[in-house]
Image (cartoon, rainbow, N blue to C red):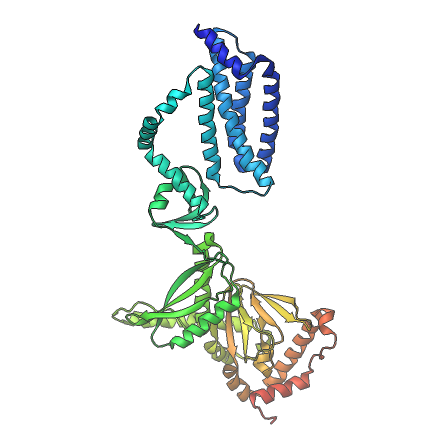
Length: 510
């Protein structure tokens, strides 16, 4: 009797004449599953695993015995195959067909549909096995109460997940902060929300936890692009005007156009307070790539430090009471001597200054100013007037020239050992191009005032320097692209340069 009953419900569910159709249906499902694997590589593992289970169950259904143990195996295979097909077609519906129609329902709906499908499949099997489902309905109130009590956490997570999805509290791809944890939301399912941190950690947060506690969505404001305000702190001694610090830092950051820093709102620098011996400042900028928070903070700090150093401003140092002894003075003297020797060596590489003697080199070296730049800094603007020359110690810079049509052209790349800005130093002429740091650059800056005393004492240097300038300008003109030469002024001759140098430095002819 038991075997006959079992055969009866299985035959009612899948009549033998349907086995061929079932095989065709599973084959069609396999084709769609393959399409899903190609379209969604992230689903490949789950789809292939479920499909293998389906195929294995189909083989058992087709080739297992009709009675005894074979029949029991076939029944089990039918149950497993039904569950696997429900899972597969839910994935096909939500991950292949709906996206093809440009519909993107919440992931949690897929999980709920699968759960409902499993329950429905179970009820069908029970009904075909001869169980009267009306008895279940009459006792459903008691069963519901028991299930609700035993599964209150699970139900809470499901309802919380639905709330998160349907009221758009948080969406896939957004960055959230829960307590001290920060990460990007990658999945919201029926049980939990999955968050990936910047440290390559995966956090699984129960949906009910998110609903019961407050959480912050980083970089989100209605109607605005995703960007998150960051704070970078630094300290400066009291002897510098705050307005000067703020102007230097803000102009440097706004000109540099740093990666990951929003153009609007612009970065700003504010004075946050006065501490013991120093003023405390903060740079506030808006981060566009929330995955690169520390990296972008570091880039901003390097630009702030370089901008301050270029203007002879330094970060505040801790204050200590230190007993000064003789060795300190000796150390400082040795250090100053070493720096002076390095600067003299750099000056000797400048062709323009080749006619200076050792004493004059030392005088100039003592007045050179160390000026660092970081990648993206604009060192010189075309058309601006500045009476100094730069000697490159390290790094690379690009020389750009603006064209009449508003575009600009890269005309040269200078490396360590080069110098530029000589016409501004010697004649006061405005800058002929814009120079931008291609990498972190260290320069020594030679000002007009430092060169003035030497030219006054040795007026004949103007003749020698003018010859070198004329040759250098002619070489530069020969390397210039044709479109930049059309209609341009010819390179000044030596006599003209001598006259310009004398007029600029106030030198008499005798």
